[in-house]
Image (cartoon, rainbow, N blue to C red; front, top):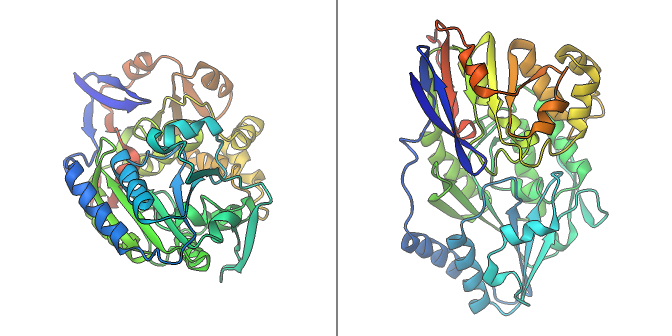
Length: 415
C-alpha cells in the first residue's frame, strides 16, 4: 500500500493506492530551503537603497492577484516600510488581475494589515475591460499594448512576482505581472493567441514568441524594476532577485531551471496531478495548468486525474460553457474560433487538446462543479477512493503533488 499526501486547498488530501507501481514526481528535495527573515530583509534593504527616488512624486508597484502565491509579508512589509521612510510621495499598489475574476474584498488577503489603510498608500484593482487604459503602440507581433493608465504614468514603476514554470509563457513573473496583469482584454487575448505556436511552451524563454511578446511589451511600458521571488514547496521565499527589468528576471529563471527540472524516464498509465493547493487550485481555470506537466509523464491513451479543491468553482465561465455545449474534445477544437482568439474560451481548447490523447478525470470538493461537468469530456469523480480502488493492479501510476513547480525534461530513452 502506498499513501501520499497532496496539497488540496489549504489542507492535504491522502491518496491511497494498493499494489500498483507508484512514483511521486516532485522537486521538493531541491526546493526545501528558506531564506531567514534577516536574509530577506537584507536583500530588500539593499534593493530599496538602490532606487532613484529623487524628484519622484509616486511609485507604482504591481502585485499578483489572489490566484497566485501571496507575496510574503516579510518582503512586502519591508519594501513598504522602507519606501514610507525614504520617500515622501504616493505609493500606488496595482493588483494584476488580468482577466481573472476578482473581489475588492481580496484586498484584505493581499495587502498587509498595517499598511492597508495608510493614507500614503493607494490600492487599485485592475479591470481589463474598463476604459482606463493607455495605448502605447504595437509589438512586432502586432499585439496592441493597452496598459493601466495610472500605472504607466507613475514616476517609478516596479513589479513583484513569483517565478516558476508556466505552461506557455516559459516562466511566470517578470514583466508578465504588468504586461498581462495590468493589460486590457484586447492586449491579453492577442498575446495569448500565441499559445497556438508550438514554440510557446513551458520552461522556454528564448525563441518563445509569447514570452518575447511580453518582454517587448515590458520595455514599451518602461517597467523600471522587478522583485522576482522563487518559492520553496511551502510557498516560502528561498531566493529573491531584485533589480532592473528584464535582467533580474533572467537571473531568477536561470536559478529556478536548476531546481525544477525533472527527467521523464518513463511514461505512466495514470498521472494524478495537483496544482499544489491554495491559491493554485482556487478554481478550475487556474488548476488546468497542472495538466501540462502531467501530460509529459502519462502514456498516450492513458488517464490523468486532476485533483483540485476549486473553492471558487470554475473561475472564468466562458470556457466551461464551450465544454458543456460541444460535449466532446473534437467538437470543441473543431468549433474553436482561433481567428478571433479570446482569453477565457482558450481554456476549453487547452482542456480539449489534452483530452484528445488522454482520459481526463476531475476530483473536487465542489459538488456543484462536479455536477456541471456531467456529460462532458471532463469526467467528474464523486468518490475519490472508489476511483482509486478501480485502478488495475498492473497499472503504473505517478503522482504530481505540486505539478506547476515541475519542469519535465524529456528523455529519448523513456519507456
